[in-house]
Image 1: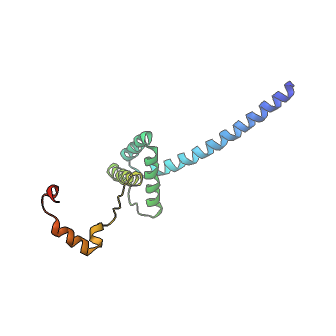
Image 2: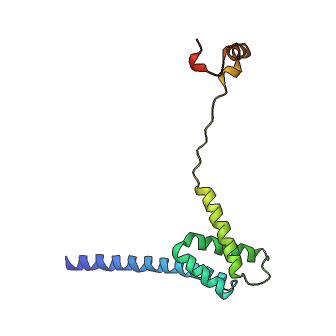
Image 3: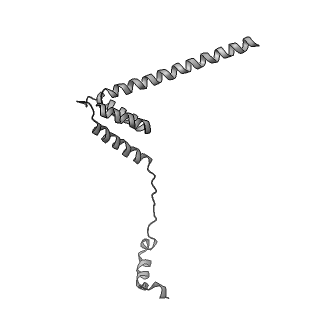
Length: 135
């Protein structure tokens, strides 16, 4: 029984090590992408982006993707400044706000009296300012 238990433990340990290696590989690939973006940013911009990543990692990743796209398209002539990172962050926040915004739209039916012209003229002739006293 102890041999079986030991075999199960070893198999589970091997699974855990294999899972850890996979997660390490994925985190190193994301770190590589982040370091590539850090090379495209001025030091102040990189610092701001790292602070944003602490509170809003989704926005920081969106900025990183955007900077990578600009670099891939050859549109970056110099390193991205902190002011440009702020503008990109504002744009990302605006886009996410539009996506997350809840809208309520009221579709009202057309005016019923406008549908029948004869009824609307007869009603308009009998209508006065003091509807309360009309009989």
